[in-house]
Image (cartoon, rainbow, N blue to C red; front, side):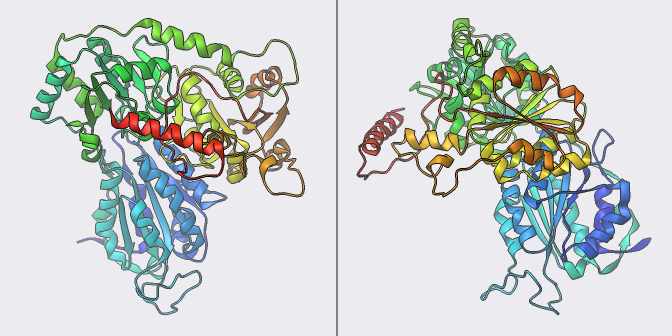
Length: 610
């Protein structure tokens, strides 16, 4: 057997660099890295040696550089991914939030945190957490519940089994998610005689799971029996490249489609069978057909509470739930009739079995009424006045500036709900929302990942001042890498979304907006100046007209372009939406809370009857 002598870290990097997609591209597009004593000498030297064959990118924070990697995978439709490495200790635990985000969203990313000395010679090492009852425990064990596959590399040759398992997980449509390989720092530097053929390029083919004949027959029978079916499109439609197949299926059988946050843009916004966003942040058109549906066919959705209105949305007492999903866990939720399959394969097979079966199309007036209600909210205000713009007006300005290749993205706060309702996505991949984990701070880093995945597309990152304050450091990374993207920062002086939720559940305005927090000096943050100090081109505008002018100058700017506008924290789109189960205190001295509790109990009783 031919062998080559390499350190564990060198072998790791060499293997990572030759794992390929069916399209001939490396599955891993490189590694985000912040070095410390736990990875700089071993893995750092190996990454340097790889050079452009496996590029390394320097982030500013371990969590946010991982967010960039995750956004890259999401925008790539899970066809490609990236690795992320940190040192032992706080660098590693900073990435746990990102690992949870990837796990919730079923997205591939390879975490490579440094770990303790396997040999324990200098035990305890700097930043080592000592468990008094378990000598094998390290902080990297925090990754176990948020990883789809976890391994601690304590001997170099363990890579021979661990790496194929890691890639099998990241490329499997059902098990896809984050992988963590904790790298003991002394082992990173140890040499081993590796089989040369271990480093032969390998193509990881996309497995398309076909439906079981029995499940397919039962689901087809249920669809034929339905008179008011509806399709709930989820993120699995995008990951399967099944947008065209979904459209063909809906058109062939006349079934309306509604979209979750992850599924939005599965159909063009103006397709007559696309009745819009569903659930808590949904359109009235979509929620009406869901409430009346006698059959709900989920395609690639995990039926999150925002999608189902905390399972109070589907109100027809005879409705049946079908879940077409590649993951058995999701296909069986809430007693659903499962059709475990790849979205594309499942839709094609179901169409073939259904033949010419059709149902009556939805009332076109539902969609017309929805847009008649909400389109005026996004219009530019007439004339100049001193009132603060609303988020819907900001969205309208961004929509008018967007082109057919624009990707709008967001993650947390007010904008996810407003964008879900109001943004008109022209094609698949035009809407990128991280709402599985709703992670503040994903936005700027995520925009970088999107642009790295699709460099030719225009990216508009929407975020509030709260998210910006939580994680803005990758703005410097975007500037250093010369990444063109637009950041539209709405400053409502606090956490406006949660402030409204606080009020809606009877609470007093407290600790959310900056004016309602404990402080001695009022906050006056110049976000444009701050962004500019990190290398962005930044401007503060006061009106929607000025915002339109600033957006029109995007093509003149190289690198990140930040537009800051003050907005009103209180209004949100009053139309559409649905109840969301947020528990209200049973006991309170405040009348507003008591009234909110009474309404909450009424909603709980109402849901129990469905």
